[in-house]
Image (cartoon, rainbow, N blue to C red; front, top):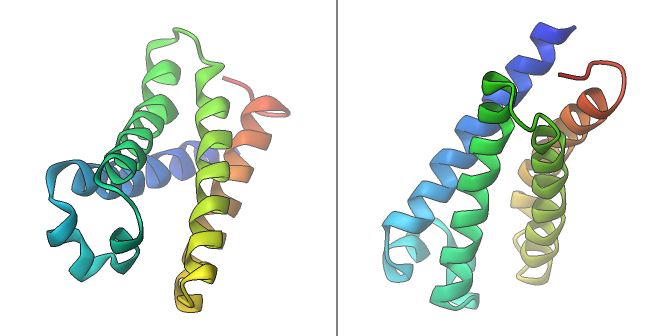
Length: 123
């Protein structure tokens, strides 16, 4: 089961590293084409979301791999869960219902990682 949890951690980390890195590297105008929600948030908010996603991606893996502060791994998963709740709310408010299943899937994966690392499969 530990291999499954590690796989979920890696998948989440890669997904959020890519999403967050894109938000940090590109302008809001460029992001609006692929991420229409960007038109509803400020540049600062968009960069903050990107930074949180990148930090969470790193925290999903690095503490566990280094054996330093492994409690950061489930904390990062919980943070991503909260971030995805906010993302789903934003998409619903904007009428982008087709995006909510993506948010929900990421929420479920983050919840599984948090539950496993806080409970039966600690690092």
